[in-house]
Image (cartoon, rainbow, N blue to C red; front, side):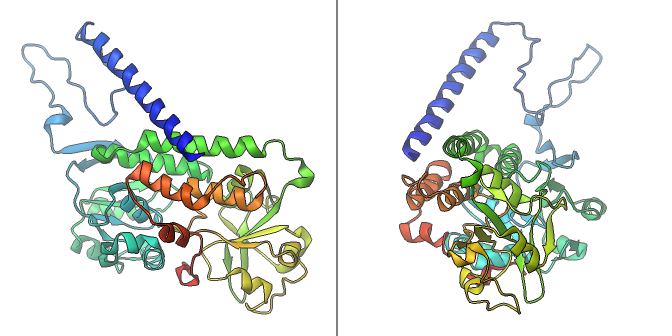
Length: 400
């Protein structure tokens, strides 16, 4: 199946290139005053001049590039970026590592990002990420003096966090806001927009079009297979986002769990809850929902056995259908915790769909799909063992 998808993507890109070349040739014969509508927003056009004015310098002749980040800020960055700090947008260090096929540029990342890296395939592929500093940030609070010591060319931070931009501006450090929520927690659109932004900043590594096309192909394939599921056959899923001896949190309607459920043709049992981000529930509520399937995120350390054997706190899950029928699963941990948007989002979508509806996706070899994805899109060769490791996450990767 994947060979066909990759072939279609490559053919589509080749066709687009041919069209672009034809249009370019036609434009050469047109008036010099016409400009291509596809010109990047980051490239400044030459200003109209008269005999008494100096022409405006093209960005091609400067050492900087100007972009608009996900918070709508206009940011001027050096074209040559060698030192990167990532603050509180935790999946981004893994995305950057795969995007570059290297973590050499990462000099600072947050501790939750580091914990995921230490306990996932990311540090196996890019051990240099373990050298990044983590002490410059506590939650969403940065220590600007520590950031300055790292001498970053750019700091990436969450567009949803207030205050970081102001701190960076005062220190004259370029900051780029990256959003995890702007696209209503649609993991595919979020990843596509992350890659598009990175491709704009680092055009020599441009992966925007092939990533977008691949993601669309996978999403459309899944939708086609689940679209005729009657309501009576749809899995009722519960996302165990955070879990401790005293609390249970899940996804309401305004968080990633809702999108994942919709994307695989399932029902998010917490959909009735309008709270954004995660929402706390008690076990009595989970019993009332009685999910047929439970997905445990890597934002907590629990494994399926912890629900089967009631090893956490005083919670007793034994009467819930998903537990009685052994339909509890730990979500994948590829380069980062896959519940959020991240580099593994298309693979996670296939894994969730196959796990929920194995008969509809019996032709999907998830190990081979993973290897093909990394090879064809990013030039990264994974062994079977490395690919399989993604789907057997360890508890130590928990963010909390």
